[in-house]
Image 1 (cartoon, rainbow, N blue to C red):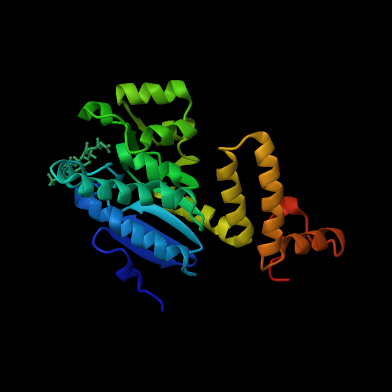
Image 2 (image 1 turned 180 degrees about the vertical axis):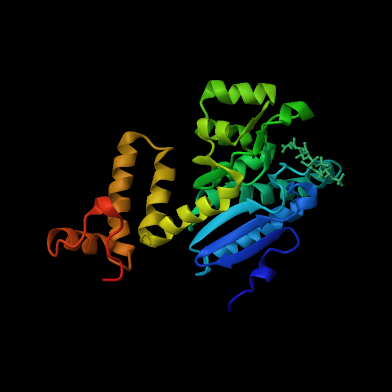
Length: 280
Ligand code: ACO
C-alpha cells in the first residue's frame, strides 16, 4: 500500500517526494523547528516508513521556514519531562535517541542534511548523523548549551568529536560562540556552504549523483565506512573483505561483474568517468 506523503509526517514533520528524493522537513517553523517529544515520535515513524519506500532513493533532511532546528525544545522536551515520572523521561530520551542518531547513523538510504538556517544545540546530532551535509552560507550554528546552563548532552558532545578537531570543538563547547555556514564547512561539520539561493539546487545536484549509483553497493559502502571507524585495522581488513564479498553476493545488479566486463571485455567504460552502464 502506498502511503500518501501528507499522511506520513503527522503534525511535526512534512514529507514530499520528488523524482527519487524524499524531502523530510522538520515542520514547526513557529518554534524554529525546536525538537519536541512529538517531533521525535513523528520522525521515528517517517524514517521507518521511508527506509522501505521505493519513492525515497535519497532522503534530504531540512527545516521548514527560517530554521534547520533551534535544538531541543526547551519547553516541550526539557520542561515537559522535568516534572514527569522517570519512565516518561526515559521514553522521551529514547524517542529522541532513536531518530537523531540510532536510525540516521545506520540508515539504509543515503541521507543529506540541508541546513537552511538556525542550527543549535541538539540539532548537531541529526546534522552529523546524516551522511552528507550542505549548508547555506547564511545559516547560523551554535553549541549554545553553555549559555543555558546545560552541557552539550544527549549525544552532541560525542557527535561533534567525530567530525571536529578537539581544540575547535572545545572552543565552541566552552564559549557557545555562534558561527556561519562557511565556518561550518571549515570545521568539517558540512561538506559545503553555498549561497542561500543555490542551497536547494546544489543539494539536489548531489542527491542526483547518488541516485545514479548502484543502490546496493552505495548502501554497503556507507555502512562499511561507518562501522570501520570503530574497529582496529586488523578487524577492519577482515570485516571489509567479508563485506565486499557479501556486497557482490547480494547485489541484484551484479555491478562488479558488469563494471569489469565493460572495462576489460567490451571496453565501453572507464571508471574515472562515472558509474558503469547500469541498464546494460
Ligand atoms: N525551544 C523551545 N522554543 C523555542 C526554541 C527552543 N530551542 N527556539 C525557539 N523557540 C520558540 C520561541 O520560544 C518562540 O516561541 P513563541 O513564539 O511561543 O514565543 C518561537 O520559537 C520563535 O522564537 P524567537 O526567539 O522569537 O525567534 P527569532 O527568529 O527571533 O530567533 C533563535 C530564533 C535565534 C533560534 C532563537 O529562538 C533562539 O535563540 N532559540 C534557542 C536556540 C538554542 O540555543 N537552542 C539550544 C537549546 S539547548 C539544546 O538543544 C540541548
